[in-house]
Image 1 (cartoon, rainbow, N blue to C red):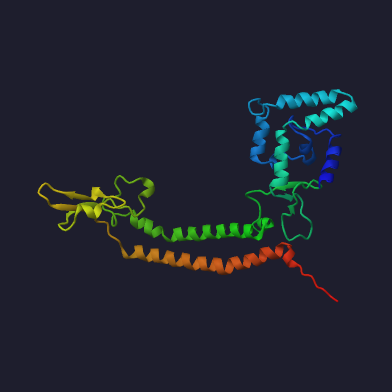
Image 2 (tube, rainbow, N blue to C red):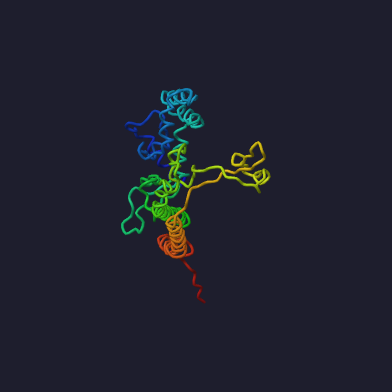
Length: 292
């Protein structure tokens, strides 16, 4: 890999990079990444590198490179080795994107099971691109390991299950927002909580057997206990009423989530694991036969 990269550097150094940014360097010219295929952070760094407060040694790099190009061949070789020791921000970003972040080939081989074929770190013999957050197929996430693909597949399943459970509970939201549940019509309750089980319909009732110690625990609710001047004790009670359908839809959603999670965990994910594993070639797919 190092010899291949070195040869590409030698070839690319003899060619002009049309439209190249002033902070492009050897590694950047080898890979020739289009800005659209760079990370957002790298594009921001390239734009901010023109400012001295962001890249203080930018002028030093430009000065050394300019001196190197104006000298003779023997002296330019020495100066070039000095310039490579100076900080090159875009070179670091290019190295990070091509050697650390996972990439795939821009063109997949014919007959391949995967839509995107993972490239080895530092691959320079063909064009590679970063995995797109939105357009990467779920199946190709297994290129980073079967567990990675199963993780994102499970997230999608849980999102669908919880979305359907939320739709099942829509009648409960409508009930909480009705006058049958809360005659006070949710006065003073924020809009986002008006369809919750918060009850603002309450009144004071006598409670001769109640004491202050019964309310002195976490969380303290002294505002729901009071004593009159003559020693009578009162507590604040809610008068919101619950209906039959409230429990019915809650029960249905609990049963649905339980059954859905069982099916997802013990059936669908098991099949996905086999599908992802068959799509990837690993050492466990091979065996050694010893014959005498």
